[in-house]
Length: 148
Image 1 (spheres, rainbow, N blue to C red):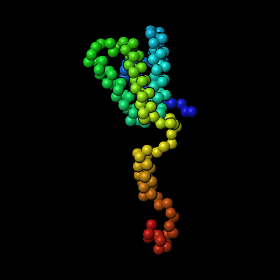
Image 2 (cartoon, rainbow, N blue to C red):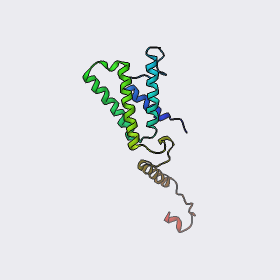
Image 3 (cartoon, helix red, strand yellow):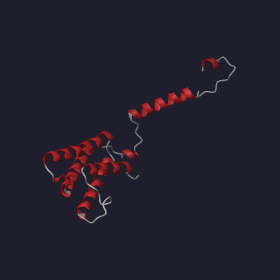
Image 4 (tube, rainbow, N blue to C red):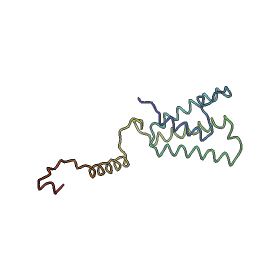
């Protein structure tokens, strides 16, 4: 199984939206146990994201922004590591739910499934190449040369 590089990046970006810095990004020992627990939750989120289409990954980030917005309207606890950890757990449950509803059997980074956008891009690229170079080498002095 390949390394979940892009899904890990999404999970870390979502954690940053909440203000949560993982144990790898913070060097001080303050609340180290809680940070390590949070880092494990981020890894869970990473694993769930691997199986989601991009649209649902965006929903997860939207949910994180919503949680931050709700807290900024309601109180000043948002800078608390405990609040961040609690919201990270909420997001993990949300991503697990999305994976159950929309997840694929195979991780997205290992899938070879073509999307409509992939097919469209491939078609445009094929047509562009066809205009640049004719795939059939027509003889220069034949009647068929005029057809190509």
